[in-house]
Length: 506
Ligand SMILES: [Zn+2]
Image (cartoon, rainbow, N blue to C red; front, side, top):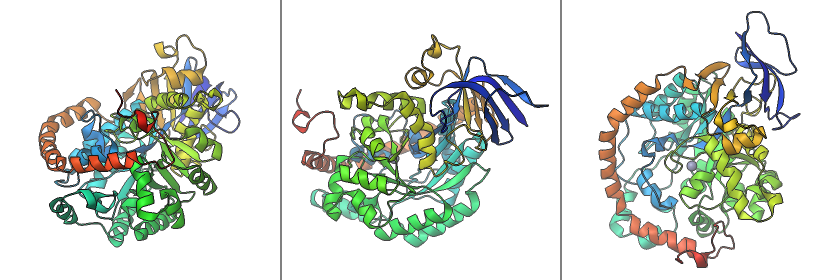
């Protein structure tokens, strides 16, 4: 099957053009791009698409998402990470979801993503109380059926929860500590056995789906787990996906637990490498940034989530200047409330402009587009396959209709894409050469029926979760104290837009 897109506006994100638009033709042969550039005759038997009034871009890569949180879309507000996690990733009272609900949960993330031009997800699933094979099967099945490309974890932590946050033993009452310590922790062998079986079953499935190695965070894993998972990531050519320095509490954690920054700590273990993607990377020092660049590491920048949880503002320009690869991510569907990457791009384009009046340092639309495509592909270890429109790469691409409100009147296409478009101009989305969105609608699944099924099950889930929230609310007063203590410390970094003295002024 050959598809010929003729005379389209193209943002290829390739070496020659970068994000500068040009007019040209694209040939898709089977799963790959066979030509991008000069006009070519339509091959015999090819399906021709008139590219006039169309913009073609590489599919967007969501470099960091948690589909687990999809059940909590729109549920919470005004809580910092360490408090919000009590309700979205509860410590106690978790009951495994049945596989059909996990399937539906994954489906709503994938459907929203595809309809928003996202062709590849890096889905870091923190499945509670633990991730069994049936649970991860359900995610792979959903992504297989809807037609998206995805990397699916495998998130793991093996330290007792109580020892992943500083000062817990100082503030929490003995009975709560005892209750948490009763929860069984994972083992390195247990995780590697599970990951090996999951890889065997799903890695490179459908030519689109891969297993992702994701230790949850340096402070949430033992040294042994951090090293063993890095070796395993190298073995299966997966990204080594890890949360690092999202909040100020975590910046204090490095100093309290290890006497160094969390970046220095993971580097000392040999797990800061070209495979490593640090989700967030907000509270990094200048020397952390230099170290991350030297190791050729990536970050996944999640500007909406970081604002929703009041985590702070990642030093976007400093990271780019140093040569750290920057991907963009939505983060979870609770801390962001959607998986729409065009929203993330819009916010990434705006947020950093208020961090300095020096407008030479503001992100350009082109830099944002690069991060949302090639940056994400590099972070996912898939840059030779996806992320740009180039001959030989996988045919993951998005066709935007330029005759919509969002593109009328038409000025700079890069600016329109970042600052005007919200996904409503998307006509077609190809993944691996297959049309998975056509006329703005999903082609492979029945969206309406799936949404209806999920709605039908939500009341029972929500009632159960309300009980879980109640159990975990007992921890909140103590976590609030920890949050306030950590945020009140002077650690020589400020990643908030206000200074500490201004925090509680009215
Ligand atoms: Zn995350």
